[in-house]
Every structure is written in C-alpha cells, then in structure tokens.
Image 1 (cartoon, helix red, strand yellow):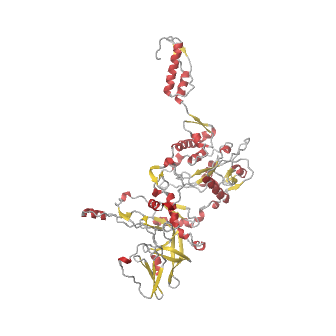
Image 2 (cartoon, one colour; image 1 turned 90 degrees about the vertical axis):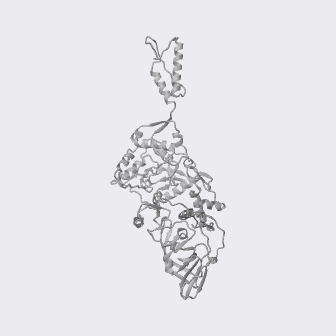
Image 3 (cartoon, helix red, strand yellow; image 1 turned 135 degrees about the horizontal axis):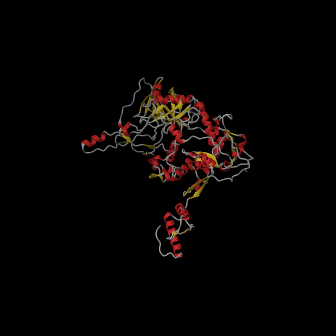
Length: 634
C-alpha cells in the first residue's frame, strides 16, 4: 500500500506539488499524509504513486516486501474455527524488510543424464521468487522472474525503453490482452522476438522467445513463463531457488540471485463479496502506436475478448488514418472551408499590453507554441497592427488549452448568423437509436485555413516573441459558425446522431454563468442583434474579468465576449417598484373626493417592507401639514 511505503521510507520522497483539485471539490473526510491536506486519501494520491514508481525504477525500494501473515484466529470452540477457515484470503499489508546482500548468480555443471534436486529439508528452504540473469538481444538483463504459472513471456516497458533502438524497432503490433491471477486485464504495447541465452560462456542454452511488452509497474525486468521454459527444456525448483536445464554432456544448475522484491504475498481472512455487489467490467486503455505509447485508446470493458481483439487488430492495421501529432494533420482544403474576420471599415486596430503569466502557464505556452509552429499552425510575425494576449484554459485531464483574448477584435467583426444546432433537438433526435456515437475532433479548429489577409491580425504576445495563427484559432467571434458549417458538410448524413457529453459537478458560479451561456445559445439571434443587459446581484462581471480565471469560466468568458453584454447590479428592486407605483397612485383624498397627488423618490436602498413604511410615514407627514384631523383607510 502506498501509505505504508511512505511511512517506512519517508526520507526518500520529494516534497509534493500542490493538489490540483479545487478546494470546494475536495472531500473533507479524506486526508492525504503525503500532501498533509484534506481532499484525498494517501493510498489514492497520484503524486505519491508516481514518486513510488520512480523510486522503484531507480532500485531504491527493492528491499520492501510483503509479509506473509495468517489472519485466522484460532478460537476455543470448533464451530468458530471452522467458520473462519472457510473464509478466503486477500492482500493484507506491506512492511519494511531487512536488507540482504545481493549475490551473483552461481552456476555449476555436473555430468549427468537426469535432472535431480537435493532432498527437501527445512533448513535448506529459501524464501522469495526464482530470479535469474539472461542475455536477451545482446543485452545482459538482470531480475528476470521465472514463473511456471505464466502462459507467455513478458518484458516490462521500463526495460524495453533501455534497449538499443535497433532492437526496439523490431517490435510488432500485437492485439493481445493479458489477464492476471486476480482477473485484471491489460493490453500489450507490442510483441518482440528475442534470442535468450541463459548460462555462462562455457555451458549455456539458448532459444528464441516471443516477449509481450507491457506497460505496468513491476520490480522485475521481465518474466520467463512456460513457453520459454519448454523451449530451453528447463526445470525450476522454487523451494531451493534453483533452475536446471540440460546441455551437451550434462546438466547445468543456476542458483537464483538473492533479491527481495515488492510482491503480493501477505494474506488475511476476509468475507466473501456477494456476486451482486461485484463491479462492472472496467474499460481498457490500449497504446496502438509503438512510437506514441502515451497516447491510449479506451476500449469498452463490456466487449468480449474476441471483439476486443478484432477491434484492436482493425485499429492497428489503420494507424495511418489517425493524427498522432500536430504535424500529421493535413488540414482542410481552402476550397472546402476558410475563415475570414471581415473587420468593419473605420475601426482602428488595438494593441493590448502584455500580461504576466504564472511560471507553469508560461512553460505551457512555450511548449504549445513550439508544437504548433512545427505543425505549421503558427508562425512568428514581426510587423503587426493587432496584438492580443494568450489565455490558458485548464482541461479536465489536467493539461492546458491555449486560447487568445480576441475581445477587442471581436467587437469590430460582424456576426455570422449561420444556424448552430440546438441541444434540445439533438437530444430528441437520439430517441429510438440503440447506440450513440461520441466524436471528438483532434484540434478541429486548427485544421481550418485562415484567410491570408487575416493571419497577422491574430498576433499575440509570448515570452519568446510575437506569433500569429495560420489556421483558425479558438476565441474568434465567428469561429463556431465556421466550424459548424464545415461539420455540416462533413457529416451531412450523420447530423442528429452525434452529441458531446456534458460536464457535471459545477460550482455555484459556474452554474450561473453556464445558465447565461445556455440562454445566449438559445436566444442567439437576439443576442446578436441587440445589446444585452444582465441584472444580477452576483459578481459575474468581476469573476469573468479576473486575469487568473481558468477552466470553464475562462472558456465561457470568451464565448460571451462575442456578444454586447453588460452587467448591472440589482439593488432594492421591490422598493423601486413600490416607489414607481406610488408615483402613479393618488396620495390623499378628501371626503368630497378631491385628490391631492404627490410623488416620492427614495435616495437610498430599501426592502419591500421598508418602502411601505416610508411611504406611510411620508403620507402622514403630508396630512399633518395640511391640517387633516381624521384619516381613514381608502
């Protein structure tokens, strides 16, 4: 468990970065010992798991081991003892293990025709796994686990990455799923065929083995399973940590390296989980392209093994269809779609002053600009009339999306009234279909060409200079209409069958702004044709205009920037209505029917009841000055 590892080896961990989860969304019932803050449990902390993985790769936690414990309680009565023994076992704990001296692999040779092992004695038993060294692809690889229960050979990604490029280039795609002893399933990154040599230069055996490259955390570099043992005709004996195999003239014996890894060996009794409480199959993440192992595709967990294998096979055969990096995007031809700004005549250009950015955002801007320049989506500009500032929007996966504040330029552009889809109609059109398809375009805006005359008008500040877009960026006034026009052409036969998923768990302010965005979409034509005044008692304008606003609020602020929206505070609405009512209504009437009209205007804020009392007091004062003796309610 990560918590136990942190407790045992606290001095080896670096100070963690701040939690990325907003304070209002953190759980007050969970405490992270690594961050020393509430919001998440220690065992679920991703930053802690990441540092543990780095320490394991650096072999700084190889002395940790799980201890075997019997959690069965021997009760005095036979009934209780029988009930406890019927319970299954499960993982219990991890504790620090005493350090042992790492010994080299000991090899011996004897002239014999049969493989035999020494007698089993309690004093000769050795704990731990059977781990050897092997030459694979002309690399001497240590910590190879001999596992007679594995149906294939495994090579872990951290070991694969250290191989020579010539060897790594021999890996071929493989749509094969691997299932562990507890039922978990992972997908291999590919298959690599290597010549494995076990033994020294005097006596050795060799065979070709097919290794499945797997992305998983492990204290070993690889696993040699049943097919590999069969290929070299080897017989393992884990009690003595011995591996024997025949060679010409005799039998070779290899004693295992003393290595105490972090492995699951501790048990304790626990109740059986009812079948109805078992969770649904989880989705699988698969790396299709060997050159881009970090880009994974999610496969539904409800598919059968045959369906997953066939789907992965089809995807791997069509890797050229997908854009794996920005430079792979060919873009949309000029004849199909092109975005124009159409700035009205008579408007002067605006150069925004450069705004400061936090170090993380500055680094993200630098990386994004470099990637987009290499992809031909941006270029450096030296002479410019318009100049804006970049705005970083944090996406749900923690990465950054770079936008530009085109608010000043959007005010000078006419509105493109191309009809956008209504969410209610889209939901209604899905009725009756058994499947729904969710599509997310890869940098869809950046595949649309920007008019040549308008490219330098999109110039913006960076720490390395001034750059402009050559493709359509986010934040332009009519970018949504241009993109929707392209989508209508592309998916002409699929309109009404695709929809994007909605985000949940918004903060109160996000819900308020989202409601305004929703109204702006529903009443788009009114928002485009008229100035809109939002009367509210919430600080929407202050929140949206803050320079450090991020996330959905920043995105919606850019969307609302397309319209002429002003915000007015709502003060004493009820009191003002009553005052306006009193202005139009008669104040005092005589018994003969003569009316004395008067008007009141309060120079202060007042609630409904306060306004009524003030009107009553003012009426009585007027009656006193007029010499009225008797009053009655009209």
